[in-house]
Amino acid sequence: MATLTIAAAQFAPVDDPVANLATVRTAAVDAAARGADLLVTPEYTSYFSADIDDRFVAAAQPLDGPFVTGLRDIARATGIALVVGVAESADTPQRFRNTLVAVLPSGDLAATYRKVHLYDAFGSRESDRIESGDPEQLPVFTLGGLRIGLETCYDLRFPEVTRRLAAPETGAADVVVLPAEWVRGPGKEHHWRTLLTARAIENTVWVVGVGQTPPIGIGGSVVLDPSGVAVASAGAAPGLLTATIDTTVTDTVRRVNPSLSLRRYDVSVRTPPGGPGQR
Image (cartoon, rainbow, N blue to C red; front, side, top):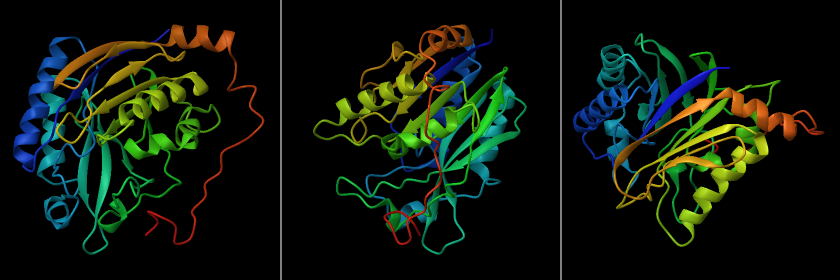
């Protein structure tokens, strides 16, 4: 048996990395006081504005820049791990990377994930400014004896992402964390909760969805157990929720429903030439 207490901080990041770093620091102190081992924050925690434009490119920083350096300091000071969404500098001119960084309590970087499925939907086009991540990435790191997989926002609509993270022959993740900026709109709250629940059920894996709050996002952060039951959830207001991941629950669910071992299909990587978000 292994357990891990995860805290999810939902808030609305602003267009000021210094202010956003201060918000993460406050959340980390609160999470540590509640006994959390890991704090997860939303997509675009380092910088956000309503339009993904040249301001994002200008605000993007390398992974050795002041924002991620600040995250490493926070992890060391509070003694907890962090998964945080950042705007990372890219090699391609006039573009940036939508990146998740996982920082251990030691301050070391455990993993990075650059978003693969860009949000070219519902009237948005992330691919106009964002450099897509390599679909061969397998972002899984270990904390407290548990394997933690990473994906971002729109990736949720592609079930192969979670399957690849959770399948024992690939990622073997015990829990999948998904920071998001799930944009408000007709039916979007329903999509968010339904898809998160489906990913938990179909992979018999713990799922943690962490969203930005209004005015742009919907909030709705949630921790789901491997049978899709919400063990902690939030509404639209900013706040911090905590839940304990317990692998004995996973073992029980998988004894009853061994769907991962009964699969007849594998997941392969596909990069459509010139397709949406492929740059």
